[in-house]
Length: 537
Image (cartoon, rainbow, N blue to C red; front, top):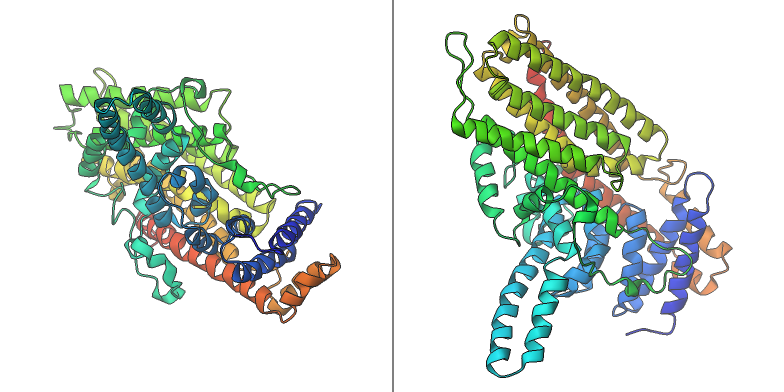
């Protein structure tokens, strides 16, 4: 249902976003605030126009207000097959906004949709055959085979579930996020408390369950097999079922959305990483301690898991260096660190034929030291990125890196630490064992990186205008001026009492606070746990 003034509001907010994108320096936050305020007013007066809500999601996405965007998306009432065609509006933003539990819930809904559709198509096609409707049966089977099973949204959802599993917060499940609780009341949560690997004792059992669950095409862990069969994007057949026509009003400014290539690249990269991660945990689970200073003998199971991990590393290396994969330097360096840690695990457990403990330790030390050098480059890259961008973009980068690279790195460091202790290279022997000293240096370097990430999230919480001003009244004035300057007299009367602008600012502030409240606890937990490597603490 569209009211007469709705199209005018859409056009005005389009112009405000266009003006923001044309700024030569940092984007003018007050223009986006003005657009959000206009759309909030418009949604109050025209609550049944979905395009106003879609436009508002786009504006709040640029303001990095994931929680408010999610609330508006929920008001759209997306369900059933629409999940496959409309979820792209919000799903990437949930990850960039640190709302990992909500991202898992939405992705799981997409997985359930595809699982139930596959079952229903079989039943209905069978009934159509029985009743003589052969063409209808063929249409249903073709739809399932060509549209649903190879759905790009299905693949993307699998990757998100696998990536965010360890970051799930039980208090946010089943609408718990809607409460907007103050920071002091956010329930304590630990890495891997609900599901996912976490570098702890229960990882082996979790990894074995992931392998079992991966056998079903509609389970998230099956992305491990999808990635294992793919060394290039050209190898993957897909169907992009996203409905882009709903963004018809984006005539002056088009919100950036993931391309097909980006969705495939991100999703398959996640499949490769988690395939490597699961295999590393599985291999460490069958490791044997040395006896009388001699390396343990390799069992058949140990050799099989070792070769499986080596193959996964080779596939990941080939995939990441493909000419059709776009990956920035920071992510590539962290990927190299992950590979180095997996190589260290493989070397510890199996090593080379007829090697000695001294030779194995020397080889491991070399790998760990190379990982420490990579971490130094990672810190430089992140600082450079943070220096050359505004604070909210640095915070968004942290939210993306946490599930994609940071948590897997932490898991492998903890797994390597456990193996070192098994081989007599524990933390307390850093002064007598070169391997223990090398690992301590790497762990503390990674801890420093976590400190950098926490600093970025603290700046992300501090919301202000383009000059980082926290003067709310000044921001309100600038937002109102940006509307009046465009001679939007009708819209300006709605915002004249400042209420709608203040409301938009509050929504952004609350959303950003909720983001940091759900990201910081995991960073702090990892930082504190790695403190055991620091002799001064």
